Image (cartoon, rainbow, N blue to C red; front, side):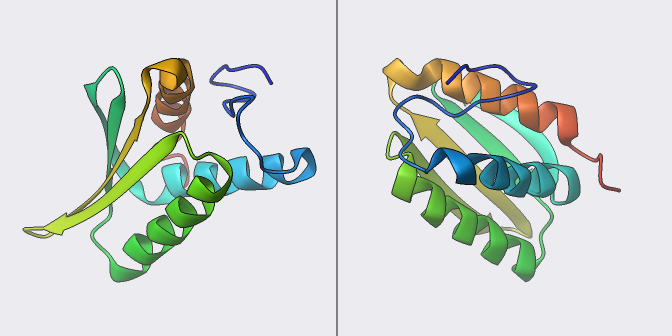
Length: 115
């Protein structure tokens, strides 16, 4: 599968059935558009998404992260809630940096698009 910000960002290592991949992308796009308020790369292999500090948003992000690790085991997710902030850190191994770059670009394109 190709890796670019506008169409596909799933890596060939993703085991999610092809027919389900557009649905998962749509779930991420919805999270980016409605619940992400900031995108911050913290290293070449880590990206932090600042989420709206709402319990339902944290729960939705956690659910999506758990399901994503089931098919894309090269991702690691860490959900942090502190001082009224909710952040989702996404990291990957060096072999999948391009996937993270594409995910970052997709998130940046869509932040606030749903408001």
